[in-house]
Length: 76
Image 1: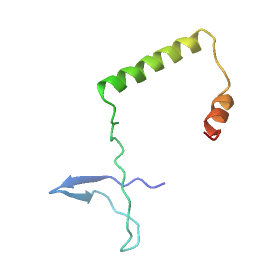
Image 2: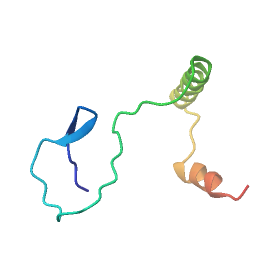
Image 3: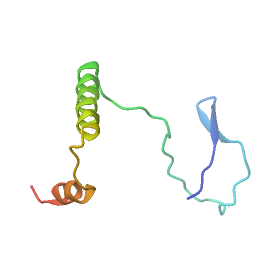
């Protein structure tokens, strides 16, 4: 994986380093810190679920991650 840093100037991306891509190479850029699209209610629900999950783990109620992965891979 190659990381290329750029700065927005005048509405355009300006690369601040030398690149070793061939001339004409088209790059697909992804913003690294895009945040998320959760509203306040969704963020609270997520944080509440994480708190419950962490409390459960601290209390010793855990399962191997393979169980979770198997459940996630099941067709719906």
